[in-house]
Length: 222
Ligand code: CTP
Ligand code: CA
Image (cartoon, rainbow, N blue to C red; front, side):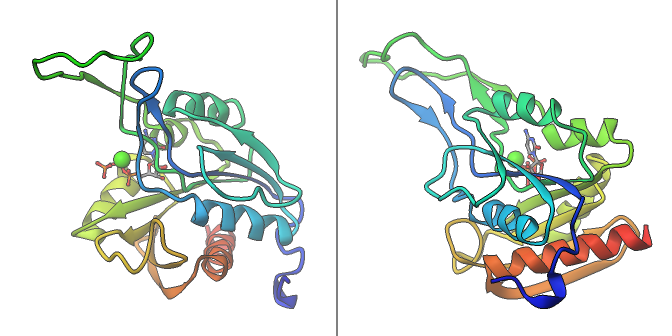
């Protein structure tokens, strides 16, 4: 299952991975969410566990099997994910693959009844979990993802700086054959030292190993 050269190379490392979308409830039956399948984060959690890491997976609602031997924490909203992650900051590596809602809304009691006039929902900003971690990190290595449809490098480098992350893993979600719902992914990793690394189109399971290896190498040269 796990290639020989990887065996136990992450042994003793505490790794927290976030995955999936979040859902923000509007009323008893409706909610706001996004297209994230959770596959990339789950693949990273599984790969890290196979390589000997002590893995915690904080996940929004997804249709995936939980990888074996990982500590699993199920959350729903961005606020719940914030609490779950910030309580567990004592990690060697934190990988934020979740597609966290940028906005939430005040949940209405019961089910909103239809009226003749239009309905306006007011959305409130959620907390940026990655930025919060970046502002408080000590020795943790912090990896973020960036889903972009254009000017990938510029936005990814902007997020790296703004969130004080160690790496941003950017995928171009404009290409529907890769990313989000797909089993394949192609990414480019942008590191703090100005270096970048492209990882070509491959299944997310293989991509997960490539990402972990690149992070491990970056930690060694850091
Ligand atoms: N992220 C987070 N908390 C949020 C929003 C995003 O931790 N409330 C994290 C994501 O998990 C991801 C990274 O920030 O690792 C980048 O997310 P992305 O949505 O690409 O960037 P944003 O900063 O939210 O900017 P925008 O959506 O406008 O591109
Ligand atoms: Ca966002």
